[in-house]
Image 1 (cartoon, one colour):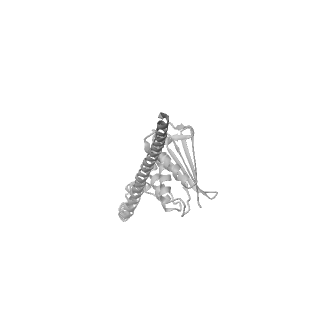
Image 2 (cartoon, one colour):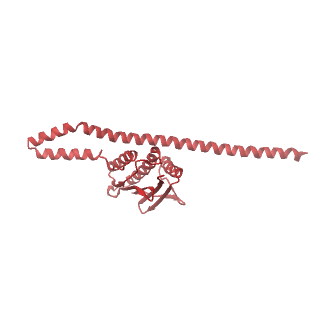
Image 3 (tube, one colour):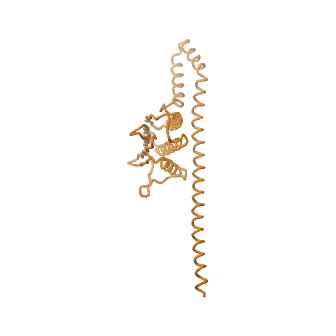
Amino acid sequence: MKIQIIAPIIAATTVLAVLIFFAVRAAIKRYSEKKLESYQNDLLQKHYNEVENMYRQMRGWRHDYKNHIATMKVHLDNKKYDLLENYLNLLNNDLMTVDTVLKTGNVMVDAILNSKLSLARSKDISVDASAVVPEKLIVSDTDMCVIIGNLLDNAIEACCKFEEKEKRFIRVYIGVIKRQLYISVSNSVGGEIKKEGKTYITTKNSDHGFGLKRIDKIVDKYNGFVNRQDETDVFATEITLPLQ
């Protein structure tokens, strides 16, 4: 009689435990997805602010164009060639901070690339970049922003760990190879690169980890491919995404 009573209790307890397990796992998944979504929204706002700041500086420089010309003409008329040369150097340095680095053929990629590479140069990082991107992609503008923004944010941070500024570099190549969009970013790394098996893990706060996860998730969404490699003081990421 006791066995007949205990058996349903055990069965019910087992079912309850299974339900609790799946409920907890679903809750953790929802929390993780919500946190990732929040991180993405914060990242996009950060990228937007950087791009807006760059173009605000460009608009300001163009607005002052006539004043710059007038000042230089005064120096020239007064034969103040040393002052003219100094003024030209100041303008050139100012313009370099807002100059468009690349014109890829894709407006969104132009915006995020130019913003990030301008930021890299302002931190004394040597930049070598080449990019040609189709005007229309199956990858959404938002997803491209997240991929490129994260890649370059991580690269900039890794470079800045080098106290020796001459060791800081970022190389970017984006193009079409075998009917796929190919993205390559390599950079110097002033610090330890940590891995667990074949998976790279962050050496900083959790946002870096979310950045890697967002890249992987987006690439997987489009059935693309990610390859990360490291050598002595150098880290490289390759991504391929379908064009159709």
